[in-house]
Length: 277
Image (cartoon, rainbow, N blue to C red; front, side, top):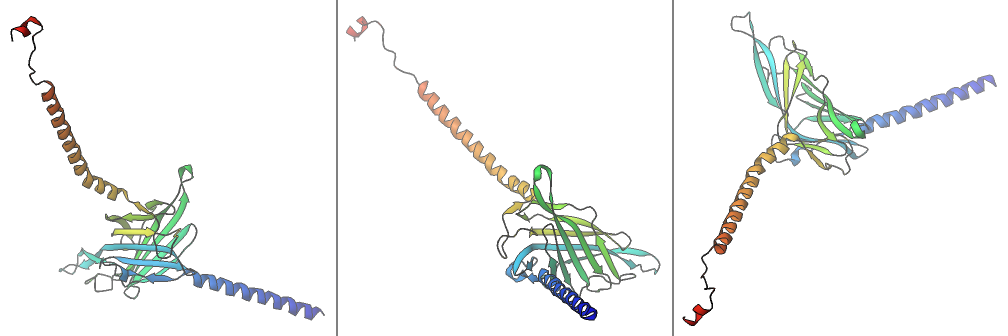
């Protein structure tokens, strides 16, 4: 009887472990499903990526990205090192992975057989007066300087990782998407002798949380730069309208003033004068 009880207990334990293993595997498989939607954009420089969980869009990114990466090459004297700049853009045909959570999300974009990988980390938090926001909390860029299409004659080529530090970018109210046509520039510090990598994003629309409709961004939150540029564009029109209004009002007032001050015929006050007329 003791052996039977032992085998039954062990079987039940193994069955429970198997069930939990299957459930855990299904969760892992469900949370990572990236889709490249760049073909929907008419802009050849703009990429559109989405992360879906359980068949529903949970993260969307639409932007154009430009990279400027310094690297060393050997000078003609064979002794000194000089710094060159590799400039390239994020290709539309990149591969996508990602994860979605209630307070943390991530998208990973790779291309050229993983020679380049861009990772963007998002977080959601409460700020003053219980206002909930989301932001980019970290950006990481992995690049291989032995990839010769962008790095020509790189000295001591290899893989390097560049990351931001204490980042709080694109701060947006929760439930809204961040929109900005103007260029947004981030500086990452590389493991290659602490070189500064420049990552520039423009024509941006991003939403990492609370997407209400599949493949659809929520209400747009425009960046301050776009708001200023729009004000600069409309301000001359507003001033022109005010000036024209002032001119019209001045002309009207002057016209009425002329009417009121026009010379009127003076009638005699003494009625006896009417008899002689």
